Image 1 (cartoon, one colour):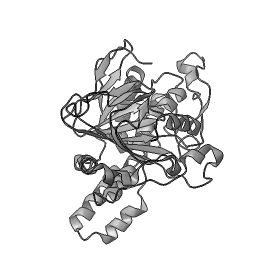
Image 2: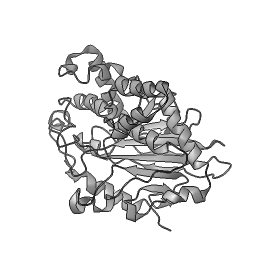
Image 3: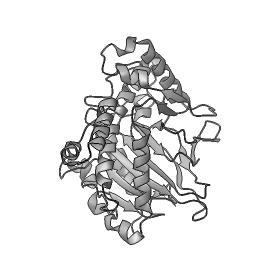
Image 4: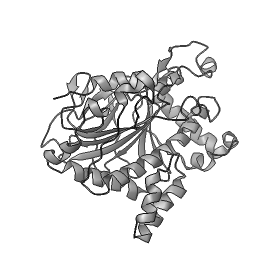
Length: 356
């Protein structure tokens, strides 16, 4: 449950990542310290920064740079991958096409989801059936974004190995191999293991039937500066799933988080970190102990702002309900009924897009 926090804490998660594959990780003093910090942040703010995550800043910046190059293209070029319901709401949205609580948002974006084949989730997944649309320009956009997604999610995609075989540049090959080996992938999953411990369960609460086959969403977003558009870049909202990893420009302060008193607290960029926040499904799992906090984006800078937001979710067809640990932390009072993640996502998607 949110409180009157006045800042967003920074957590060094390197001790957690170092022990996250150890069955006895909960006994490690460094892990226990990180878990305590995660619990405090999720209980009080629902937001925190993470450092020590193992993904090089050069890669974080590279993803933002190639995003900026795409948004600098003429509309006619960007519209080649225009989002429509026919492709499962994947692709490019121009400024004002995404809406929050009925109001157009002043940003443009590429929306990506885990690809859903026909019949994969039956009628539940019908709206989301489709394949991601990637631009041909700038070159290598698809390769870079798919590898970034793989590292956030925790799986190395086949295209990475193809890239290793085809690349003529040994240094570049070694760089990407270094990233994969250093991070060991699994970033979001490993953070969730710490959160599972913070809730009083085993580190594997959010695997198997809950999130062993996680859905994911990624929004690649551009916010014009005030010299172009002077309005709310993205209206107040909560995120839908378990955990969000935000990679934002290092020099523009635009993200704001709402505390219990209704004050908007700034989440300024901290170079080399991800901003993390919990989503609606984790709020249910925690029985309301952890808050999916309202946040918004207002770009008051004259500069164009880029953010790349990765959302780590449950299994698409998972029925989410409070964990058994709620009994010891909320006096046995069950505050939330079950919700199916896929139904929640589809409801949001169908009300967040204005078709021309």
